[in-house]
Image (cartoon, rainbow over all chains, first blue to last red; front, side):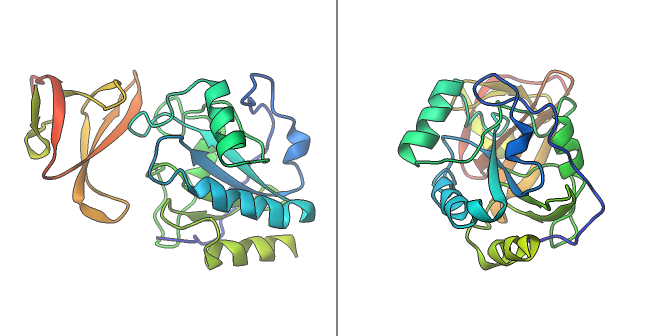
Length: 169
Length: 67
């Protein structure tokens, strides 16, 4: 289950709450290729922050950004306050990419962003619920959702890197 | 009390290691390609929460369901 077939699902970046409690500045995302990732601080996959930040530093000046979406719906592995989440990201992993407030990505109260993202299939053709922390969606500068990568696909996996490079051409 | 993961049934109420509780409405087999896991899910008006457990592991049971 890896990169999915491109679909006509389109997202926008309006009305996203930022981790600091203020609305996220959509200018940080609009017109960029965005890798949207639901993150958690106490997951075995949490070290993926390192690879995500390397992507940010490699492609950040070419019109790309990672967007972290903290979520506590997977075994409660993101229980912290915004300050605690920020501390882990910025201090432990040195991240520089934007983060939303804690959002729900599955279920009846999932955020509208994830209503659209979850409709996108992965490489195996499977759409639907987010399986676990660190599932990734690549969104084109136009807002079209280009691909879905399951949590065990590492941030710097060649399939993700190749897709980012193509999105930036 | 704890019970074996394989003994959990729909309607049982469980507690995660981080202290959250869920009432199981669905049991998925496998997680991230690992077939040795069961994933207990509450998908209700109250919440959506997923708790994976190794098939041969134990879980904290808060109460038995009625189903």
